[in-house]
Amino acid sequence: MRKIRQLIDTLARETVVVHLDGDESIKGVLLEVYEDSVVLKHAASLWSGGETKIDGDAVVPRGRILWLQRLTEPEVAQ
Image (cartoon, rainbow, N blue to C red; front, side, top):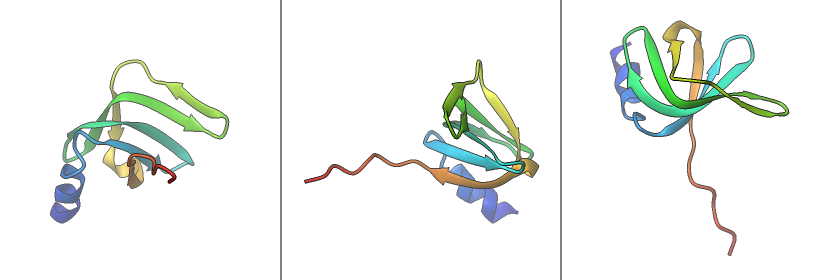
C-alpha cells in the first residue's frame, strides 16, 4: 500500500481522471493525497455527454478508486 501511495503522491498538482467503482469518473487537479482519500480541485463529473462542474473540492474515498489517469497535453499535429 505504501508504494501505491508514493506513486499517487507523484501525481500531486497534476490534472487527473479518477475512475471509480460504479462507472463514475471525476476529472480535476490532484490537490492532496491522504491515507483514506484524495482531494481534487476544479473537479468535474464526467459522463458520456460531457462533464458537470463540481462546486468546491471533491473528496474521493480511496476505497472507491479503481484507477487514476494522468492527463497530458494534447499532441500537436505537424
